Image 1 (cartoon, helix red, strand yellow):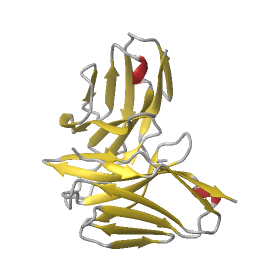
Image 2 (cartoon, helix red, strand yellow; image 1 turned 180 degrees about the vertical axis):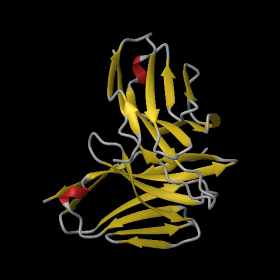
Image 3 (cartoon, chains in turn orange, red; image 1 turned 90 degrees about the vertical axis):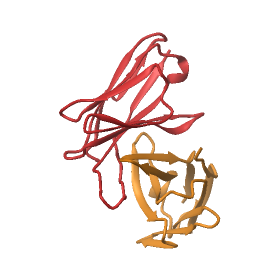
Length: 113
Length: 115
């Protein structure tokens, strides 16, 4: 079955860049997603990348995709204390009108002031 | 605010009991998804409904069932509850795109505690 792996913790200083890494197994995934979960809240979609892209930039966020190695990363530039949260990588399995997200366990980002 | 609402926010019950979690999707969204988030299993897909019909099934236990009603709201029924069912249950909704892109909007979740 599909499996998505992430490191569990990351600690960075305010103003530095954060890089959160993820590996996935389903090579047929067409879209890969990054979600953010703040304490006591639901999941918020941050960004996504289509599988035929290598990179996508959206303001402070940069997503890199290495399809050969099935490796996805999320870079947050100029990390702020408000970025402290859990970040989930997810791959989409789709077929016949069904859409199923498989999530990693999440990376808890702690930003040190 | 994603536009997806879930009730109740918190639920405390005893082992062996049955509970119903409710979800209202965003206006216009025909698909509803249920996910379970627990400490040991992480976030797991349970089931998807599209316009009242079941579309996909994930790691959903036989003690659990769901349905989507004509007004598109959905309910997740959990029965014969066990301590291990304690978790955060999320509902998400999406519109069916034609390009293959699917963005799921998540509700705030229902926290279930089984004592």
